Image 1 (cartoon, rainbow, N blue to C red):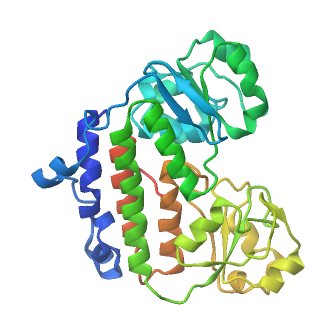
Image 2 (cartoon, rainbow, N blue to C red; image 1 turned 90 degrees about the vertical axis):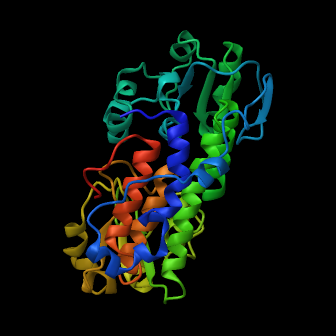
Length: 363
């Protein structure tokens, strides 16, 4: 299902009035009576308040500062785009730019969110990965603008030598995700859509915070993709998700900026109330519950082991829909304040508005 840019903006302006944007809809009582997310509509007043493309139109040549601090001049409005990073590709879809993409990152054919929202992307040429970027292949596509992860900073001069205009993104926390939205929306003349996207995220997080209130925060151990003995410290995006959901990171003392390796003894010493597995974990909840080395951990003893949603995308990475990881986690940590139905309603409204589909699964 495709929507016009204006229809999407009107839908986004109205999201705060749906069950997803209403604190009342978060209660368990509302969950018992709710059967589906209400239809999203906008009043004339809201439609008038929504920024229009004309009001936010960008003038070219345009100079922007990317997330490596590089000043980049874009001579004309980009009509063709290449994205070497799944986070920027997902963001470009949310900005309504899937039809402008001519090349995407490797393994795009494995990403469920692409098959649901823009299946044509899965047959586009691959421009590689952050580890093995295809410079010549990307240049051969002659895109007007290339978006890459900041990890490729050493390859950017070579890209520029091949005549490519390149922006680097590094959305490693919520503020930098908003920064990436602003950067790409401005670069592609979709500022109104970008502002609506940010507002939708912020409104849903505000509803979550209001619902949770000042209830006691349980401790949460966020387990990594490869092993339960990997965890996320305060420097990682997952820490922000835990805090949004009204929890405390059991690994708050960890100083690593990536997944930290820990021991069973350390996990038992932290004794978290909950263990949450990463979306892309290659092990499952049962393996943790049946791990004899964790039998004395409060989370295991009380059956408080869960995996973040992964049916659509990994919501513990800084994609536009990552706020849904916080909403889901809030429903796990505080089920009396945040209902499962609230999470479903948020997912329905967000994906329908920005990706053109309604989830068939919320796991």
